[in-house]
Length: 398
Image 1: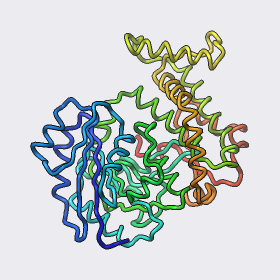
Image 2: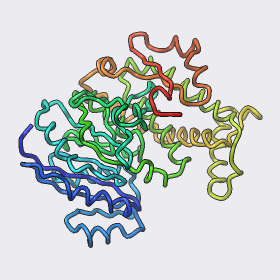
Image 3: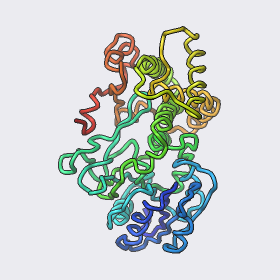
Image 4: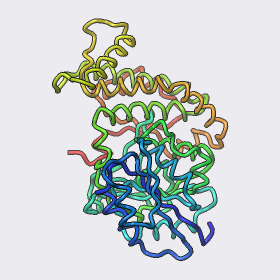
């Protein structure tokens, strides 16, 4: 890589002025890096908290792009990447505080990497800097993903080595070549938020490039401070829709036909299991009641209206139905994207998954029975390695 380069720091914010009061000063206080010119861009995603005026008054060197609508994290970063002037992009969540050497750590490794490296994945800690929030992620066979050792004390967490290959990095702290990001198609804007970074990582690897770890480039994260504003139902629907879309779009021809039975079986099993859960909430009213009614009608069409088979009232069931509905609404666009990605593929999935085996992690009610059953086990492609773990083995739970 060239010794000199220009950097664009991209921050997407929605009613996040209070968070930017920590992030922007931490960016201004970064250790200087020789040969690196830096600009900071903030997208105000339809906020009503005075973000635009506050930045103009307190951080006049920051470029602000204001929109009346909310493009989400994915579409918002795509817009900023198109507006950026830098050779390299640094994507940061707004609810973070960058460590003083974050840019310097990235820059030092970036100047030594081979030309096929598209980007570097940094690490996240909690706000106190004591526990891991993200260091290394794994992808499950059906497009979901988990961060290994999330929540563990840093001294005992399993962090990657500097320069170690990564399937994907966390989009909240990601250093990436602007050209690579744009040529890969950026984030899929239909994702809005969640798993857009997993999808991008898979696409970069399939396109012949690589991502490497830079665990010393750290930012402190107010965990879920921004995402919690979406609400559990919206987040749950995005998880389900985006994971399914990631699998459908990215598995290569020949392998997708082998994986489709277990992916779809798992989704159907989880949907049915969630439909039988007792509903720990009051009956919805207003807008939520109308949404629930639409989802129940969708469920009735899917199940043939079998009376008494399931109760579509549990939040998890409603989230999964909403995710399925969103997926079906986008299915033609997803099919078109699958064709586009196939045309630019340079590396096979089998090669990718030799480096990064797919995981089987019981996460939802009924998963342990399903994953131990004959149908699921016999339908898994024999030529791929699958790693099995409980959720508590991956994460700091309990």
